[in-house]
Length: 216
Length: 216
Figure 1: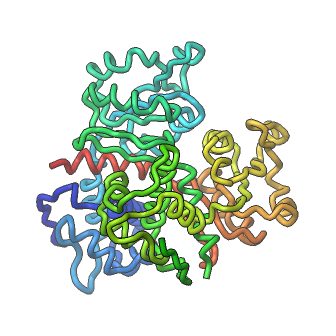
Figure 2: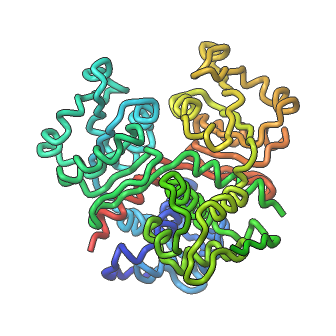
């Protein structure tokens, strides 16, 4: 397998492409666990609900992979995807908002497996501050900037109510954070060098109401 | 504004398109609240982090909208998007798995606003069965099929552990459910006429580790 890294501009890579890369990696890891060593783009496509042309296009952004007619080497492609997705290292995550969603995320086991370490949760509720969520301490939101200077979180997960979310974003951006995962049902603004992803539960359900409404 | 519905095949519409339609609707509703009556594709694009060509392409799947040079009528386009997304009616939702994520979803206020009514949650834990989550009762998972025959849920949200998820899907599919929102970190299989969307929290974080790793 010939895998040449070339400089890419993250701006050019669509969100949906990154999402498919994450999905491919999961299928490859499943293959690895089952002891399989090669996979075709057709097989990857089938498992991902897409086309083999799409698989090849998605991977082509990052160099050349696989040998014509032989498919991809499972361990090599998985390793390369982990590298592309930045999964070879620890990412330091804090959660702002220790409500229901914040608590569910703090206890989500899938994060640590992927190298996402949750440093702490923050809240402004005195009844919550000082308590822990599965070993993750809930700190006073007033400490947010002070702690950020010391601990350098890479990613901040925002699970505060919609009307408080922008203020939290402004604060963590000023503290130097460059990546935000937003669960608040609101549009957030940040400088161009800050990556924001919004997870909107109602929007996920709308994908299904769309499918149910537009059935063949 | 000239809005002709034409028959579309849901299969042809990519998930990412539907996601953008949901986002456009949110911006339009924000515009409506502020009393604005027209919006250009440039403005919609800017708010959605996309291009005006993409906006026009996304909308073109569903007929013709807007007048050249005049932009879109906010209330008309919002109404049409609600129709396309199937938001004019009530969708009956049940949650299977009353763990942390299930509980957070049961109490998520954004669903009801969009017409998604949570009928019940299900669990197999005797300590949870019979209790309520913000007024939503937790029922014995043994009742799932019996209740489905009577209540006809449209959408089932699966928040059980990964190793139990496929069994739950098989059961609800047999009970006639055609749409599943999956939070279990596993790939699920269902007949082609069943829509499955998977929300994977680790995958959302990977979108950010990708952005942090591939910065310009």
